[in-house]
Length: 135
Image (tube, rainbow, N blue to C red; front, side, top):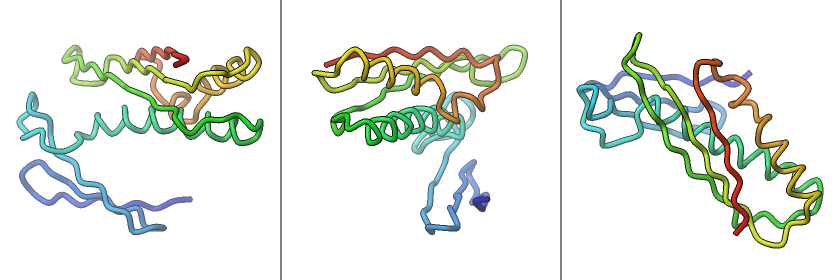
Protein backbone atom coordinates (compact mmCIF):
# COMPACT_ATOMS: atom_id res chain seq x y z
CA UNK A 1 0.00 0.00 0.00
CA UNK A 2 1.18 3.52 -0.84
CA UNK A 3 -0.16 6.51 1.08
CA UNK A 4 -0.58 9.96 -0.46
CA UNK A 5 -2.06 12.97 1.29
CA UNK A 6 -3.86 15.76 -0.59
CA UNK A 7 -4.47 19.19 0.92
CA UNK A 8 -6.68 21.95 -0.46
CA UNK A 9 -4.54 25.11 -0.45
CA UNK A 10 -7.18 27.57 -1.68
CA UNK A 11 -7.96 29.17 -5.01
CA UNK A 12 -8.98 25.80 -6.50
CA UNK A 13 -5.47 24.44 -5.93
CA UNK A 14 -4.27 21.36 -4.09
CA UNK A 15 -0.98 19.79 -3.07
CA UNK A 16 -0.47 16.06 -2.80
CA UNK A 17 2.46 14.45 -1.03
CA UNK A 18 3.69 10.98 -1.91
CA UNK A 19 4.54 9.84 1.59
CA UNK A 20 7.17 7.17 0.78
CA UNK A 21 9.33 9.67 -1.13
CA UNK A 22 8.14 13.07 0.08
CA UNK A 23 7.55 14.15 -3.54
CA UNK A 24 5.04 16.97 -3.97
CA UNK A 25 2.62 17.66 -6.83
CA UNK A 26 0.48 20.79 -7.09
CA UNK A 27 -2.73 21.00 -9.11
CA UNK A 28 -4.97 23.82 -10.33
CA UNK A 29 -8.46 23.82 -11.78
CA UNK A 30 -8.43 24.29 -15.58
CA UNK A 31 -9.29 27.62 -17.19
CA UNK A 32 -12.50 26.17 -18.62
CA UNK A 33 -13.66 25.19 -15.11
CA UNK A 34 -13.07 28.30 -12.99
CA UNK A 35 -9.31 27.85 -12.47
CA UNK A 36 -6.20 29.61 -13.69
CA UNK A 37 -4.90 26.59 -15.59
CA UNK A 38 -1.37 27.33 -14.37
CA UNK A 39 -0.65 23.78 -13.20
CA UNK A 40 -1.77 20.28 -14.06
CA UNK A 41 -5.48 19.84 -13.42
CA UNK A 42 -6.59 16.65 -11.67
CA UNK A 43 -7.85 15.26 -15.00
CA UNK A 44 -4.55 16.25 -16.67
CA UNK A 45 -2.90 14.07 -14.06
CA UNK A 46 -4.98 11.13 -15.25
CA UNK A 47 -3.62 11.62 -18.77
CA UNK A 48 -0.09 12.04 -17.44
CA UNK A 49 -0.53 8.90 -15.33
CA UNK A 50 -1.60 6.94 -18.41
CA UNK A 51 1.34 8.15 -20.53
CA UNK A 52 3.93 7.52 -17.82
CA UNK A 53 2.41 4.16 -16.92
CA UNK A 54 2.62 3.05 -20.54
CA UNK A 55 6.26 4.16 -20.79
CA UNK A 56 7.15 2.54 -17.47
CA UNK A 57 5.48 -0.73 -18.48
CA UNK A 58 7.28 -0.67 -21.84
CA UNK A 59 10.53 0.12 -20.03
CA UNK A 60 10.10 -2.98 -17.88
CA UNK A 61 9.52 -5.12 -20.99
CA UNK A 62 12.47 -3.48 -22.73
CA UNK A 63 14.75 -4.09 -19.75
CA UNK A 64 13.71 -7.74 -19.50
CA UNK A 65 14.33 -8.29 -23.22
CA UNK A 66 17.48 -6.21 -23.71
CA UNK A 67 15.66 -3.70 -25.93
CA UNK A 68 17.18 -0.22 -26.38
CA UNK A 69 14.50 2.14 -25.08
CA UNK A 70 16.12 5.36 -23.81
CA UNK A 71 14.64 7.77 -26.39
CA UNK A 72 11.03 6.57 -26.11
CA UNK A 73 8.39 9.19 -25.32
CA UNK A 74 4.63 9.49 -25.16
CA UNK A 75 2.25 12.34 -25.92
CA UNK A 76 -1.29 12.34 -24.56
CA UNK A 77 -4.26 14.44 -25.64
CA UNK A 78 -7.16 14.66 -23.22
CA UNK A 79 -10.68 15.57 -24.29
CA UNK A 80 -13.36 16.45 -21.75
CA UNK A 81 -17.12 16.20 -22.11
CA UNK A 82 -19.72 18.13 -20.12
CA UNK A 83 -22.50 15.60 -20.83
CA UNK A 84 -24.03 14.01 -18.79
CA UNK A 85 -21.50 15.32 -16.25
CA UNK A 86 -18.06 16.84 -16.71
CA UNK A 87 -15.57 14.00 -17.16
CA UNK A 88 -12.77 12.73 -19.36
CA UNK A 89 -14.23 11.61 -22.70
CA UNK A 90 -11.04 10.39 -24.34
CA UNK A 91 -7.30 10.03 -23.99
CA UNK A 92 -5.29 9.72 -27.21
CA UNK A 93 -1.76 8.48 -26.62
CA UNK A 94 1.00 8.47 -29.20
CA UNK A 95 4.05 6.46 -28.20
CA UNK A 96 7.25 7.22 -30.11
CA UNK A 97 9.74 4.38 -29.98
CA UNK A 98 13.37 4.23 -31.07
CA UNK A 99 14.33 2.98 -34.53
CA UNK A 100 15.68 -0.47 -35.26
CA UNK A 101 13.27 -2.55 -33.20
CA UNK A 102 12.65 -6.03 -34.52
CA UNK A 103 9.09 -7.11 -35.36
CA UNK A 104 9.15 -9.39 -32.28
CA UNK A 105 10.22 -6.50 -30.00
CA UNK A 106 7.57 -4.24 -31.51
CA UNK A 107 4.90 -6.87 -30.86
CA UNK A 108 5.97 -7.32 -27.23
CA UNK A 109 6.08 -3.57 -26.57
CA UNK A 110 2.72 -2.87 -28.21
CA UNK A 111 1.02 -5.69 -26.29
CA UNK A 112 2.46 -4.38 -23.03
CA UNK A 113 1.31 -0.84 -23.78
CA UNK A 114 -2.30 -1.95 -23.92
CA UNK A 115 -2.01 -3.67 -20.54
CA UNK A 116 -0.47 -1.06 -18.27
CA UNK A 117 -2.19 -0.80 -14.86
CA UNK A 118 -3.54 2.72 -15.41
CA UNK A 119 -5.09 1.75 -18.75
CA UNK A 120 -6.72 -1.27 -17.12
CA UNK A 121 -8.00 0.91 -14.24
CA UNK A 122 -9.81 3.49 -16.37
CA UNK A 123 -13.58 3.33 -16.65
CA UNK A 124 -14.77 1.81 -19.96
CA UNK A 125 -16.54 5.11 -20.78
CA UNK A 126 -13.11 6.74 -21.25
CA UNK A 127 -12.13 6.11 -24.86
CA UNK A 128 -8.41 5.32 -24.97
CA UNK A 129 -6.58 5.17 -28.27
CA UNK A 130 -2.97 4.11 -28.43
CA UNK A 131 -0.76 4.66 -31.48
CA UNK A 132 2.84 3.48 -31.82
CA UNK A 133 5.26 5.36 -34.05
CA UNK A 134 8.74 4.01 -34.77
CA UNK A 135 11.15 6.87 -35.36
